[in-house]
Length: 217
Length: 400
Image 1 (cartoon, each protein chain N blue to C red):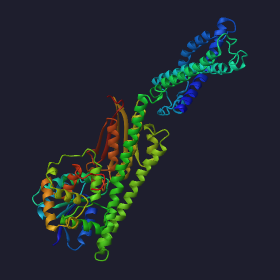
Image 2: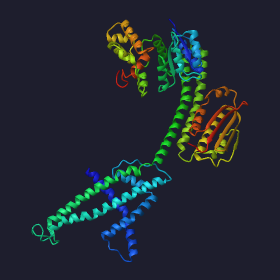
Image 3: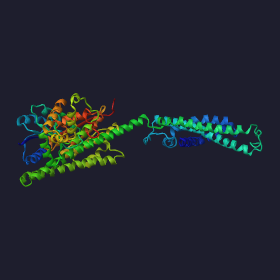
Image 4: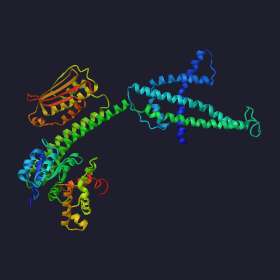
């Protein structure tokens, strides 16, 4: 099954570059482009992609707000934020807004493709260490997450393993349970935390202090 | 503890030593007034001491003793005093504080030195005396001074103990006053904080410039190079386009880098006098561009505003030359309470859409920031006649 992709970036040269890289990969297809955040929504409605590669700084509407609007759609695409610099506050804002992960523009083409596949699958976290660092760099971001108290012991364990970046299959191996069981646990964790995906669940885990930012999760 | 006491003692003796010239002058004046050489009896000494203290305070206002006293406080009294900033001009607040400290140090130092000079020899004598007196401990009778020898020895030792406590007390009195009187005054702290804030703002501006220009261009280069590598054989035409884009981006990144490094170098060299609007003529000349400058009487513009206005003009001129076409017009004048600065030119056809974009042009962010810090107004955009205009208004006095 082909993964359908939309590229949103205000720089035409970045768009064409990404289009060539992604388009030359079997199983991936670029089905649309947008030159600013406001253009993304109509394009996504029209072509129904699986993944959106989203630049953060764009005119008219930035990538954070565009992400927020995209994830509010029915059956939303996964958003992969693509930025120039790692130590960028906007990345965290975009992740909180519902982006499934982020990528640097300097990422090697193979890793870029791998990341797109990973996000489309939705079964593991992109760059768990970076997300932890971003959460830790936000002092005072500590928030009450009411659902966290209602997690069962097993679900808590699953959440901790998710924060370490383990995929469902790896969690299954770690806890010696079936893949289906893990899927159920992950589903329950997301529901109880009101999270849209793993990234949001892990951010909630860090911000509530359920998983400490310092020290091994 | 004992080491600290010894060091403080030295610090106090130093204060006494500094007091010596004042005391000697005081004695001379007293002798001159009395018309004869003065017998240096204790009450007279104390009188001279009290009389010279105001003189000490007065000279403390004018003598550059702060640096010396700070090192005494840090090194000998063992007090953590922040080293004050080097300043060319001393404020009256700072002078008063330094004078107060100077008087305190010399006064207490004088007392401690006097007592040290009196008590230490006395104690020594009281210990030696019984041994030298034929009627001493081995004689068992009152000494020739009319008191039994143990009284002498004990009182000598007791006075020594009193002296040690006196030194400790004087040190304890002096030490807490040091940070308050010798440390940075509120005005100095404020100036320092302002300096820091300015450096920080400048650094942020440069970081943003690097981010926006060089970071952006290198991203394009990376992505396009990766793309070219992927399709080199299957689609040579696309690969060739990518290479052209890489060349173009790298070139403009180098230009931007040149500009940022230029600003940094200028700042590194800018420890000396910084350029002001008075240097506008030289700037225009150095630019080599066709510039019509119309500069009014700017003598009433404060240095800070003038410096910032120069930097804004420099930035605007650079942009105008880089993106524009034809002559550049610069006007600078004082109108009412404000300085107004305007740079106008005709943009090159290719640059026009880019510059019309909101916030377009890297330099604009920097200029807007400078203007905002000075609470002025900034506008950049089309002048209505197909030209591009940057116009700035800066208040000459920043009213609260």
